[in-house]
Length: 140
Image 1: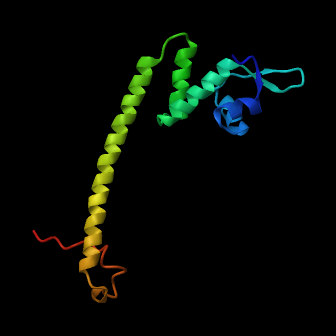
Image 2 (image 1 turned 180 degrees about the vertical axis):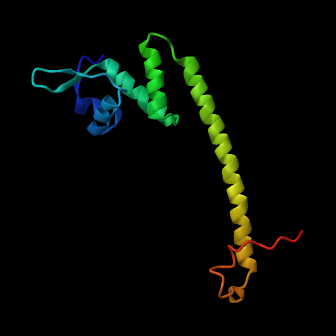
Image 3 (image 1 turned 90 degrees about the horizontal axis):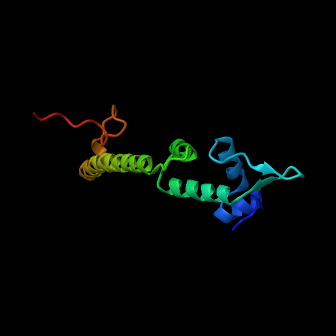
C-alpha cells in the first residue's frame, strides 16, 4: 500500500511525465493533491489508481471528456459500468464505420493505381496537370 508519494514518484509509477499529471489535474481528472509543508504535491494510492484507470481508458481510445464523465459518475458513488459499456460500444461502432470508409478509399486508390499503369504519360495534355486524376468520361 502506498501512503504518499511526490509527483515524480507518481508519474514514474505509471510511466508518464510529471507535466501530464499536472495536465490531468488542470482538466479535473485527478483531484487536487494535498500539499506538504514545503508546498510539494503529495499523492496517495487513490490518485495512483485513478491515474492507472485513465491510462487504461486511453488505451481503449476513450477521450479525456469521456474519461471525465466516467470519473464523475464514480465520484457520485455509482458504478459507471453501464456508461462505460455504452461508450465502448460507441467506439466499436465508430471503428467499424471507419473501416468501411477506409475500405472504400482503398478501392478508389487501387483503381487509380491501376489507371496509372494503363495510361501513357505522353498522352497527358497540356491542359492536364496529371491525367491519372482527371475524371474518367461517363460511358453510359
